[in-house]
Amino acid sequence: MIKKTLLFVLLTFLLCAVSFAGAAKTLVGTIPIGPDNPRNSEGDFIRLENGEILYVYTHYYGSSSDDNAPAYLALRRSADGGNTWSGEDELVLPNEGKLNVMSVTLRRMNDGRIALFYLVKESDVDCRPYLRFSADEGKTWGARIAIVSEPSYNVVNNDRAAILSKGRILLPVARHPLKKTERGQELLWSADIFCLISDDGGATWREGERAPNPGGVMFQEPGVCELADGRVLMNIRTDAGSQYFAYSEDGGQSWSSPVPSVLDSPLSPAVIKRIPGSDDLLAVWNPLREVGVSGAGSRAFMYYGRLSPDGSRLLGRRFIVSLADSEIQNWQYPAVLFNGDGTFLTAFFSWIEGIRFYKINVPEVTGLFNGRDLTGWTKYLNGRETGEDPENVFTVQDGVIRISGAEWGGISTDGEYSDYHASLEFKWGEETHGPRKGLARDTGFLFHASGEEGGFARIWLYSFEANIVEGGIGDFWLVGNEEEGYTATGQVTMRGGQRIFDPKGGENVTLTKHAQGPFRWWGFDPDWKDITGFRSKDEIAKPGEWTRLEVVAEGDAAEFYVDGVLVNRVTNLSRTSGRLQIQSEGAEVFYRNITVTQ
Image (cartoon, rainbow, N blue to C red; front, side, top):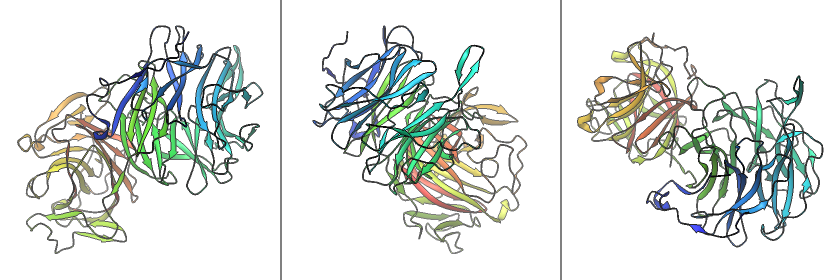
């Protein structure tokens, strides 16, 4: 039924005539759906001893793409580090279940064997994980080992098993309890989250303790990752607007109470892994895209990002699939394999297209502020010479930049950037000055900046602005005009005389002049007042606390996030690179953790 041929196809039409060396991410292959093949989905990678890479995935056949429709496990191969992939399936396992087999994880065991974890669906209420080993690099597979012997509904996602440094195997599972209804037994949507544990190389298994859920959040589809300090991080899919994180100090046996993490997310899974040669983590996930939606938002977009060693800080994020790529796709269930050259492979699927393979540079984070001084930055104040600051408007105190706001100007990076994620944290001070005395505290983060210091209004660089003003954090302004090369388009709805970001129902409007005013963030209060301390009803920043502003710039588009929440998006930017600038504009403000990820 399935040819076992090895046909490597050069997908030049998919690579858009660019080499990988010049791109942060490159689409390197697809497994499209077709006749009698309505869905290709959840899979995982393994690197063979000869350097070849296998990707084993769930191949559905027949007419239905439903989760319970018939499927078998198939594979594709790459002999060149993931740059090209074979064009025809090879059978790995036939359909062993009454419904199907799915959700593959592949791992290299300490004894050299390859482990194949997968689910067998017997019914709507019976889905259990199994394990097979291969001692001949995936040519054949040994006898099936039951990891869970009793009928129950267990969800183990693709690319999920973890082999800890001491040899323990963790298989994170979501076990859905059953309830009796008039139609019979049905699953509860919120699952018990725990790890199946093996301390003898997969021969026998036991259950760890359940992760607490005192808040009653919907828990589903966990993943685990061993941290550099020996703890284990668990991420959990939820309906609460983010991945939840829990930690284990006993090798996955028990867990701290899960809490919201820095990964904003709809009800969708994420993959998190340690970056080789680093303590930092890599995450691939669907961001929370829809305004005002907590857990059930769209999966039309896929991000990758770098996290701090304990996962508590998002150091930088980038698009894999963005609005510019597709508005109708539903991408999900990623897998990740690191290469030895600073890149990684990821694959995920949609019901519309099938599976996509990407080769991506591991994100590198550059700190723009060293915590001691303003090395790498240029000061400019209105009416003064470049670098002149006799009143100490810009100072560094205790690892934080203080901008007094007493004079108008800014600090600008010496370097220029394109296709990046910029992140900074700010906190308001108490003072306001000059014509903004007693008014809403105001500053801003300028990007794609160009020209001479003070080119715009003799104060700032020509640029685009992610505004930081009380009640309007994430508003977008042109700091320049079409004559200086600055135009942009927003998807907005008019409300109270203001253009409000509206990614669903808005119309495209293009700004060509600074005097046309801003594109306001989605939660801008129509009753906004220009007074110190103003807060809108949908305000995200918390008074007196550090707030994280992010600008994700890719090509001619940019998105603004406030504490992980998407607040604004602009497209058709007339400039796609330049310097970065932080304003001094009449208010005391503090900055820290200023980074660029590329």
